[in-house]
Length: 397
Image 1 (cartoon, rainbow, N blue to C red):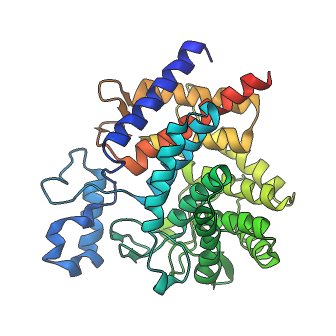
Image 2 (image 1 turned 90 degrees about the vertical axis):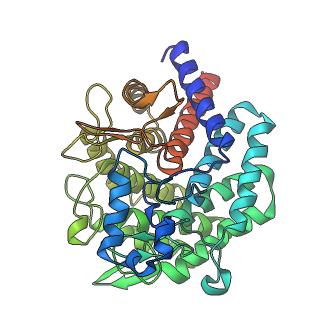
C-alpha cells in the first residue's frame, strides 16, 4: 500500500476515535429498540412477537426513529471492549500515553458494569438493552457469552500492559463464569451457551467462550479449563462442513453461512491452538480459512455478508475480515487482501463529510445511522490493528 493510502486510513481511524470520544463512546445500536420509553406502559410486549417485530423495524429502517420514540443513546460494554482493544493497538504502535489513558478510563467503567455478582457469581457482562429474538429473550443486565468474552479480552490485554491486578482478576474470573454457567450438554452436544439457561447451539458463541477458557487455562495452569476448552472446540470442529464452512447454529432458522461469524470461528479456533499450543485444529482452520477467503471476497475487495450474496454491505463484515486475514492468515497474501478490503470499504461505505462509516448498504438503500458498537467500534479496532500490523512489518524489514 502506498504511503498516502496508509495516511488516509490513519486519518479515518483517528477521526472515528475522536468523534466517538466526543460522544462519550455512547450511541445507537441496531438492537436497542426495546429501550423505548413506550415499553414502560406495555412491558409484557417486549417478550412477544411484537417485541421482535419492533426490534427488526428499528434495525432495518434507514430512518432513525429512536429520538422520536424515546430510545436513549447508551454505552454498550462490548463496544467499549472493542474501543479498548483499538486504543491498545494505537498505544503499542505510538507509545502515546493518551491512548493508554483513554483505555484505562473505559476499563474502569466496564468494571462498574458487571452483571450482578450475587446472581451470577463471577465477572460477566451483557447488553444495555432488552433483546428479543426467535431463539431467546434476554433481559438487560443478563450476561451473554460474546459480550463477556470481548470485554474480558480487552481487560486482559490492558492488564498485560499496565499490570493493574483488578483488570486481570476480572478478565480471568470471566472464564469461571463461562465454565460454571454457560457449559451445556444438550441433544448430544457439549458446548457453551450464548446466554445462561438457553440450549440454542451457536458456533461462534461456543468457540469464543472456549477460546477465553483456553486463555485462562493457560494463564492459571488449569487442566480443567484446558480440557473443557478442547472438548467444546472439538464439538464445532466435528460439525464443520466438508467444504470448510459452518452454519451459524443448530436451529432451523440458524442454517445460514455468513462472513463475520465464519471469521469469528476461525479467530477463536486460532486463539485456542495458540493458547494451548496444540495442532489438532490446524486442518479445520486451514480448510475454514480457504473457504472463507474463496467465498466472502469479490475481486474488487468487496467483503460479502452471506456465502450466497454480497448484500448487505456492512462494516462489521469488513472489520472482521481485516482481523481474520491478519490474525489467522498472517501472510503477505492475507495482508494484500486486507488492504483491498479496507480500500473498497472506504470507497463504498465511508462518508467523508461525517467522518464515519454507514451501517449498511443494500442493493437499493443505504442506512447511514451511526451505530457505535456495530459499526464505529469495530472499524476503529480493526483499522488500528491493521495500521499497527503494517508498522511492525516495516520495522522488521
